Image (cartoon, rainbow, N blue to C red):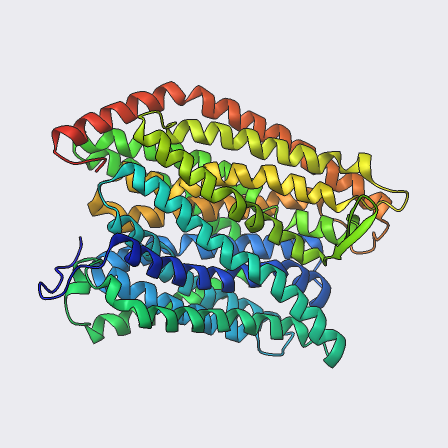
Length: 512
């Protein structure tokens, strides 16, 4: 629900309100992806974890980071207000990255910092997305376009940080020793949140009319203290889960059962007019789970592949262009998305005006085809490897290109899917439920990455290369299976969407 603006002040334009959220999201993602670029390599190279433990710890951490928004969405809707909860989350995230900047190699210090980041992300993520939804409420074609551009904000922030934090790590380690470079890089992530919060404070007037009901009322200090206490308890629990692999498994699979139970309850107890939209959202959420298993390879198996089996020198027609380090290859993902987002948003908007826009379900089908092509390119790396077992970095560039287009078609529209199919009164909570699904698949992605885990004593690139290419080829075939499943449910999705839209029209709304 939008708050009532002061009638003496002109209402800010939708674009100005959107830019305010776009910018704080950009800096928040600068922090998160700057940390993500380094985290698996930090565990393997600095803390001495083997591949299997590093993949599973990061899989469990990302599961927690993405599951937490289920609670944060409710806090925003019902307790503190959408705007306030987003800002509190940004502050806590900054604290988490600052803790990672402490120069210690203690494992519990890492788990503690990741747990604080979990709580901060839980409060920030569903509420920033829900504010975008509220700005464009009731205009489906604008919602698709807005969320595609919003997704670009993620990738502007992550492009800079994924290139910057690995460089800072190498520069500080080279000049100051003691491996302090890792922690200096994590401190830069915290600085990103400081800039984001400062920027929001300067532009906050553009958001005065957007929010949930608690935003209209004065801040209730008791509610704030309860949220902070609950957050502290959740952080302690998350740190324990990260340290014990079995607990992490129980937590993730338990979250999956709860998610299905929640959907079943909502579908059963909702009005008939809302049911078709909720079933359509459930079908697309299941497909999203499949997608993010592929996504998690970026920070796990693909980064370790870049470490061991990619020639870091980028050459074109015999000319040396530049040299990257393994962590920086993750920046190819946001770079491609930055290039591809504007034309894709334009295509959606222009097709919508002509009544020829593809359904979200059809875009999911195309997305999985692109993901399959990307992984088959990685799988072909063995054919382009030299006698030293190192493959050309062009394999990474084109693999990430196809994969990133697939990501835009699936993940870039995941939030738009919730905005389109889910009743407004469930908005924040269902944004959270979507992130629970992402969290489950992030953990499963870590499990999948371990099919290519390399023993610590195996350092010969000629022996590690077939381990990685075998996994990537299997993932390519798996993406094709996902394409066939997405094609098979297209007729069902058309029926559900038609029923949902007809009920929405009868109720005098557009898509809600």
